[in-house]
Length: 215
Image (cartoon, rainbow, N blue to C red; front, side, top):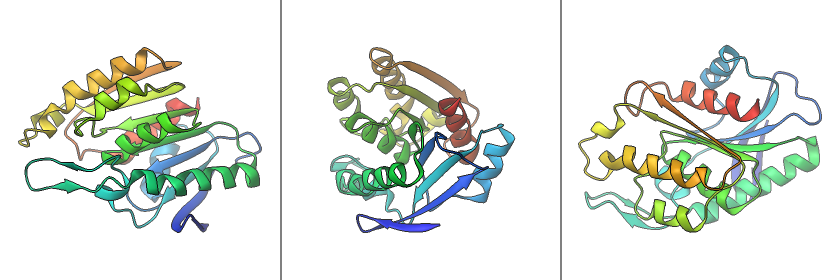
């Protein structure tokens, strides 16, 4: 089904036949819940759950926590706090309507950054940052002051550090620092080194994060 929360459209679907107490997973990637993601979840042996994903996302606005300039002509407007109003309203509405159990939030790339950012600000039970943009200016400094709790899943492609962009090439170091910060406060932290670069198998990486969080 499609629904609107705080002025933003969401795609919400059941995976399998969730009953009361089944988890809700918020997916921050492109637009909606894709057939490819559901296929990957099936292949990973995922249990029934609710899935929710925003539509018509502006990555550089909705998934960035504050304004930043990368220095190579790309600027980010830092609209995550505004977008977060929709995330939290959707989650609370789903809890009231479907009486789900744990709530998790996962994301890819800048969506992975946003997932962990939202997790530090509200009551999700855990988050997954898949190929997350930990290189984002000011990110690890923010996380040190706002370390997350709950369950944390982090993954990164082994070749992502080979980016020709000077800032993005720091992703492996920044991701390792993110992992160490999380280990100081989180209930459990899992890191997975994925094969390939940034654009290899995003739905597979997301599905592995979701299955680990929901087990």
